[in-house]
Length: 146
Image 1 (tube, rainbow, N blue to C red):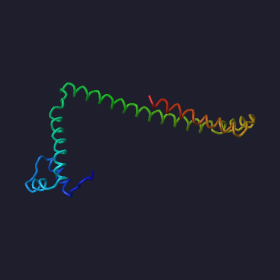
Image 2: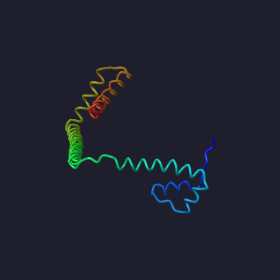
Image 3: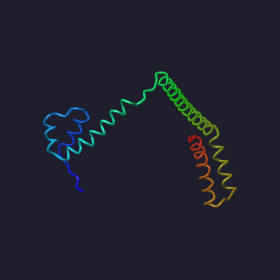
Image 4: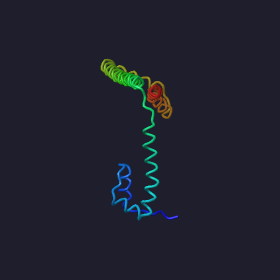
């Protein structure tokens, strides 16, 4: 089975979608098997589409109003969540900056003393550090997926 093609198929599809086939194109369809088949198939599909659009149920005004209200509430809630997240991030950043600026030297000395006293192996120390960095990130990801 070989597929026949014609250089005027796009023109025919455009005319079918507009619902107006000119006399010149009508004459071409009579002599071209590929365009004749295309008119038969595409014409039927476009007729079915127009019938489906005409028969599609249109929701009532009350239903559309209710849907718009629900969507508006969801958008407002999303905006509020975004604002809260930005506020929490700013608060956390300010708190970290204040703690580091007030107790930075003491904390650094304390951390060095603890590390010197513990005498952990390097792989274990790397694993603990990775856990301390990744645990909050994993918690944040778990919360965001709800």
